[in-house]
Image (cartoon, rainbow, N blue to C red; front, side, top):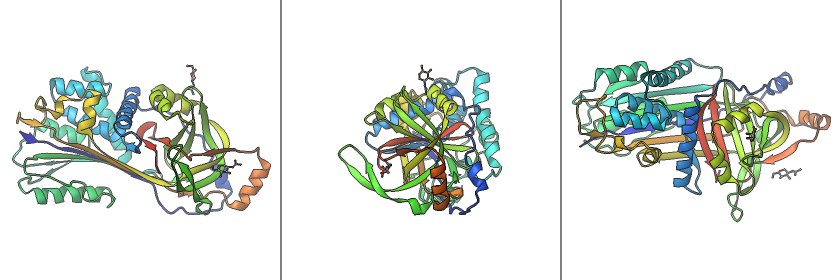
Length: 406
Ligand SMILES: *[C@@H]1O[C@H](CO)[C@@H](O)[C@H](O)[C@H]1NC(C)=O
Ligand SMILES: *[C@@H]1O[C@H](CO)[C@@H](O)[C@H](O)[C@H]1NC(C)=O
């Protein structure tokens, strides 16, 4: 049995020094409405939340952070190379009907996404891609190579896995370069049984449309549990925010726009209602939030934090019905003629930092006071206990996470 590890890698971070401008005209622009737009397909959003629930139950009382976009892209590439039952399991778990037309549309969706983000955008830096490292001794089908190249814009490299050390260096160097040095030593072990590695990465760097002022950031209590309190740096900005109180699943949601078309949704469950919110998350709820957001003046407290998640998806995806590919029943006949190949590893890693910086400076303290007296009292909203985060870009769900301990 030769092993065929797939490494899905994702990286998200948003830290850049804000250019602190004091312009009042920017003050108006920052209230720009969040667009509803056409959300990513309903099935892709349902997949994101199903995967979230499995991760949250596998790792109780821990932070969760992953990119459903990156995971489904990896699965898309694998489905391209798998046959019959193996392929059917992958597509079914992603909610794709096995009809040829649907499957083509699914792959084309990624192709369009990759094309769109290959152009440098307006302040939002997003690079999304994948690469295939294969041993020259393994013959890979042209059909698969072409699909990887045209649909997934994947680079292909010839790698001598007979020399695991140099193969590892080649892959790690590539990952480090693509992620601008943010992830080094991604692959820890590689032995000569490996014949092919697929890496998928997302590099996202965004600034808030409106920065938080770092002079407002101070240490405050965060209630990890009702009994355990820690001190965290808490950012603060009083402003008009997109807000909704969802009584159906008991939570408050604040949408904070990044520059470009990315929005971070911060979801604060009512006291003791985290489970209810996690169970209630679905495509319709997300759509409702984006549709029903109203502008609300909030005195918002949000921890400055970083979060990361590393998951061995070969242990997780079988719980979503994707089983065969990780066993000797794997049918990877679309990739190679070698019949004794299974997928031994599928690693997913993602990271995110939440900081003050934005493209527009937060209102200065002076301006703040005038605004405060001229406007109705704002509501105090503090993310000082576990909360969830969802990041959408162009209405696709790119990241989902839960912050238990910032
Ligand atoms: C709450 O549920 C009602 C009834 O199903 C629905 O009409 C409403 O849109 C829901 N609200 C939200 C915020 O999802
Ligand atoms: C608002 O929340 C913060 C953080 O929990 C708290 O320190 C502050 O006293 C609150 N302000 C009011 C007016 O309740």
